[in-house]
Image (tube, helix red, strand yellow):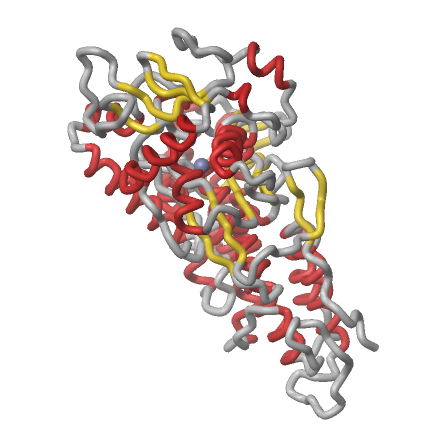
Length: 513
Ligand SMILES: [Zn+2]
């Protein structure tokens, strides 16, 4: 039995048009641009999702044998407070607050972010360009737009005239007229349409920016959207295949990137054909946003005893286009699942090196042609061969990732395989290695003891458990007898053991802190 002869067509949800489409690369190497962080503070947990998502996409391309080059920008200038066109630069505000130079601020938070990416096993991008290094190119780009008559100058800077962009707002599916005259809150003196945005932000008379460049429109700094158009085209070429980012960018930042880039190129082609966006993480049913005061970050989770891979697992447990509720219960569950995976996979090590569908199939004795498509069974292939169950699991893994990066399905397939008595040990090794080439959970090396620094009730010895339950029963008795001092004393004892007691209408429950 051969499950499938060819791999599954990679299909991705394109925000441009809001539908799932076959992915067809336009070049030998797929250009992939992912909007990166503004490095003025720590990146909170929600901020990390776009990079794990883009990493999953890269792993999917690699799995399909499609070479990719990824650029992730680092915004160290130009991003004003509240994403606005006027007002102070986020970096300069942070520098003033922390009494450090903007360079120190940018360097410190860039390094912290890169460390978090490494901890999450996100593969490094090919290039991490810094916006401040591309200001000359941004000025040149804006000059071209000015020469084409797509701009107008105000005392506050140079603005892009969105009425000159015929397809303006297509990505956001916005009502153009409504958006132009609509709800944006910022009032800019003299701006022709509310959707018009700054290409250059001029210094206000008497005010001197810390980061400033001279331009045909006076001293100042570039507008926020300009950097991504300029750096992506410089590093990936005028057109490239995929642009990713958080869903908040779909409505403004990416709309403006497209408008200025297509006006600049004016070649009648869509600038970038595939736009992919990840949804938010919700913390207490609110978007985790620094502006709302939530700054929970990966380092905090690690401090709390969670493994960084548990957070990656938590993210992959939801589809990238679904909002995910971040709760401690969900993190606990992810940590337990990760630990169980590590325990289950440990006896299978060393795992084979598998990065592509072609490699997985070849190890399972399915001959492959250059494209990774199976061309029939080779009866002489033996290693882990003749394991049709393993072949079927690899096919299911391929189907899951090819179907718009369905990581929850992929995880479920891995779990099924690990429980399936019909898979041979050699076949199972290939399946696990294949799944982890896409999940990136470091299953080839992760030690169960490394996962759980923090104990849960399951880790207690029976005697410890008995002791805790005896104390809780004694406390309940003391409370019934209204012996409050004794009840408090026991609670303190439980506290010292790291046990947290919660009184509920049906009696006390407990857990380890
Ligand atoms: Zn961007």
